[in-house]
Image (cartoon, rainbow, N blue to C red; front, side, top):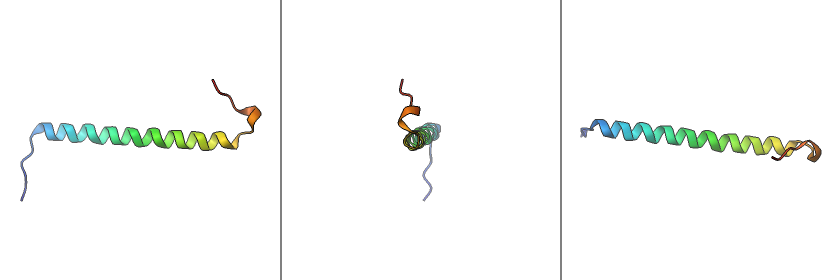
Length: 48
């Protein structure tokens, strides 16, 4: 059975997809940054 969808359901789906992708990008960036930071010697680390 195919359910008819309004335009708003596509808009909500697109916004949801964008938010999920942005959240995944932020998580990946933070994880990689922390991993790289652990590889630096303490005297080379800069914390602002």
